[in-house]
Image (cartoon, rainbow, N blue to C red; front, side, top):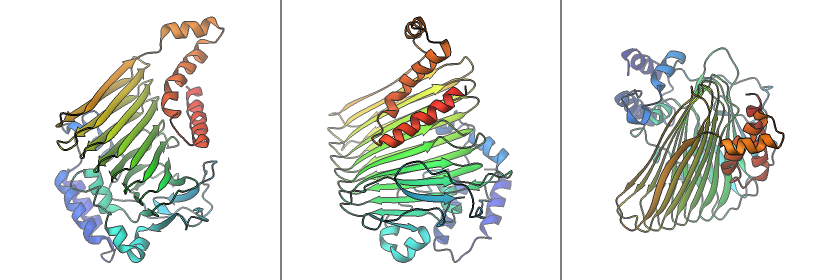
Length: 427
């Protein structure tokens, strides 16, 4: 890390409120950030993503935005029945948040409120899973976040509609830097769906800790479909699963200039499983890097991972997926697949599915494919009277549908089809 960045971070940190309840945690995280420094291309995990040069060129990383937008800031809610939590410039907006009737199912607090009202439940998990020593962007987020959202799902709660966290930043000529933070604890035998939707500008460095207790079931969605063309985002989601829990994650990316998704799940008890689904559809000079990890630590666990990419124009797509099967994780079943359409001579794709297995009684496989549209299928559609552009669009839609169709929420599935189609039709 450059001395100028280190000095500016240190100077900025000295201006922070020392009475902040998490000041000591932030102070340690700053030390961890300084020790690690921003990753370079020599860092294997960021080999194909020149994130340091891009961020330090365009953004002031030590100056997160503090000002709130005006109360009349237009917020475009998703057209669905949901519990809406709106975050404007990474702070919860009471003006726009709609949580009526949530009390029987869950508690929703800011971090400051949680520290006062649910201190034990909050501190049991805060920074315990997304640790600043493990990743430099977690360290940066922990050092500079202003506040966060704590969602505690009650034991045995079956939530009747999804929880939608809508992240919105003010459109401004300044390239804002924000550090949203989320902590979700799903109680025993609970069932819920959580949607994180991003309509953001500038640079966003987001961290979420998602904990599933025994028997919990969760669908967790990351929608990166409405971000600004110049937006840069690092999105880290760290999940921890207890016995008999099931986690399904869905990541959709077709906006933003540079997006790095770190999605990690630790399956830490028997008879638990994770399904990870992702779709990235890239145009112009977009750069999207999906880095996933599933860590099987106990026996009788399973995982299924399917990511698909459509890479066009001069865009760059990266998939770096890793599955660990620890020595104790006998009887593990793990499947990892990455399929891509590379539709331009100027587009770039890097895919690296990986298995690291230390157990001998397992069923594991991984693979990746890269290709173009099927010429025979294209010819068939043309013979039926379709224009070439329409035929190509339909084949891309068929390719993408394998992931979108896995969404159990019909309203969200319809909206994503509409959003994806609108983007494709502009090309």
